[in-house]
Image (tube, rainbow, N blue to C red):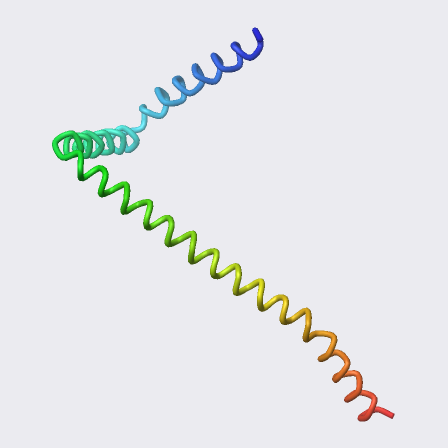
Amino acid sequence: MSNENKLLKGMVIGAIVGAAVSMFDKNTRQAVLQSSKSMCSSLTQYVKQPTKLTTDVKRKVDTVRDTVQEVSDDLAFINEKVNELKESSPHVIHMLQETKDKLIP
């Protein structure tokens, strides 16, 4: 149990040190500042209009659901085509063999 606590503690300290070191880069600082401002603005809007949060979450869920359905449909189509190829391959191979036998005595 003691080792697990040391591991977690080391990971947290490493993450903090890594974040602090990355702040030495000017572009990183500007990106973090811009992201923070954007996040604060979004949070402020959601606090003022809680229904906007609900609407946005529903929209994202619908988008994810649609994407998952499209991927599922695509996978089903691919699976169907693979099965068709499996079924037709022996027939095609047999036809090619017969053609070869007739052309090359």
